[in-house]
Image 1: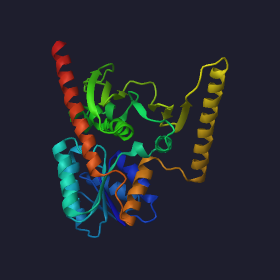
Image 2: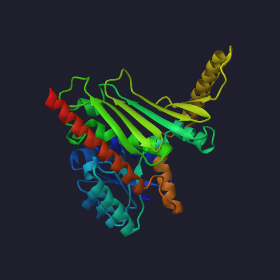
Image 3: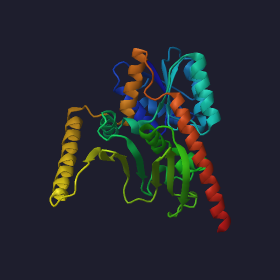
Image 4: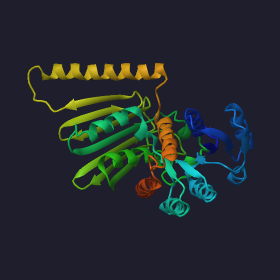
Length: 350
């Protein structure tokens, strides 16, 4: 399948790397408004054609997949243009910044009949896939609570760049990243309702109105929680699933999963439990190292794109549909509205 990537910024490199690993795919073109960037990207990745607009790119003809890596405000227009041109599309998260734009994508996909998917890559990171298998096999029993901590240092490349487009979004830097924890909570708990959203500012970047966030979600009598920070001492993504029969503690970046089964407290239980946890961590580390050394390791982007390509070959549903993307955007839009309101109130009081 012939693949073209639109948008040659930092995120595109991960997509290009992922497509290179798909045997059935061939990268034929890239496009970016910045011609110098488009040209250098094509040269670096040995891609035959580069363009400065999707319109020019589509005139190439026979483009099976358009991979959209531009800022989310532009996703709807580009996706609709590509789908109307007969290409399947894969879209970086968040799918859009507004429900209105997301509905345009969903409507166009249904009208054209091409395939369209959204890259919710944290769902396809190895430890999340492993955790999902535990849940599906009923190892945790009924899941009552999901908590996600997404921690970044103040050196985050978007946060440090005063001119980055994320700071113009409603909700600022959080708008760009909140889709990740939203879709994780949705995946393990189902349809969620936004409860409370609180933001504060600890860092000293004047262009960031907020840099700490805590949010809760409701699913009937169950709860989800998200904490996000841009002031952490290290980058970290922690996910915890609390079920009736067991607890899962997941560290996404280090790719470890710790299973804490039910237990009765006894004189020796603490020591045995600590030994069991240490053994699990050692096992995860050994397994990860073996995959990396053997070349079998795929990160979230690589796994998603591999499965998206496979779905096109087999004629099956994309791993994440645009309908699911729309549901995440609805939650994201609600959260951004609350963040803006909270920031406005804080500014008025100070």
